Image 1 (tube, rainbow, N blue to C red):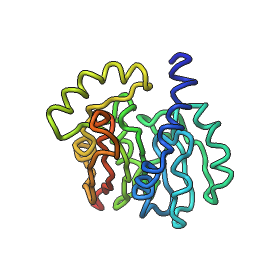
Image 2: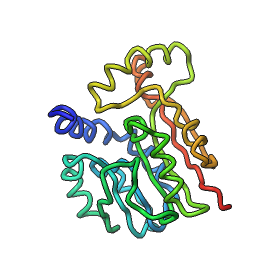
Image 3: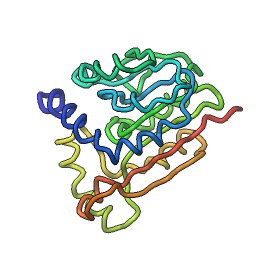
Length: 209
């Protein structure tokens, strides 16, 4: 992975994704979580302050040791027990239908095989369970998409494998999850930031049958 990806990127991610505007979106993504929850791409625990009281336990999946260390204070302050389940979202060490909900925020952009990760999400969700997500990805305007395509090779090298052009809602639907709610918009900021800031907040459900 290298010093940059292992040591620097997790720290930059912790700082850049803790802004107030993003925290407001985290609140929306976490709304309605309940019971036993799996968080895919736990990072430094930035979602912990926004977990609803209905959440009874959280299992964390993330490859970064730096992120896990930086989450220590947030885990200590969280009333919900948090356990680290594993490192790889593409191969979850959990039984079928074992979670009431799964949460992912700014994660599907980086996982090498998002289709495999979402297949695992569907597998570990109980029938009727929900996948809550906050992600960034493919913009709706052709001009912005062209810039996303140009910038993506550099983005992947500098941001730990992060992609700019993934169509997250399409990936979620292709995994066999039924979209329940979806909102997509640019995060606040100048137009020059649009290749990085087209965000999706949504919830999709594993069918009950």
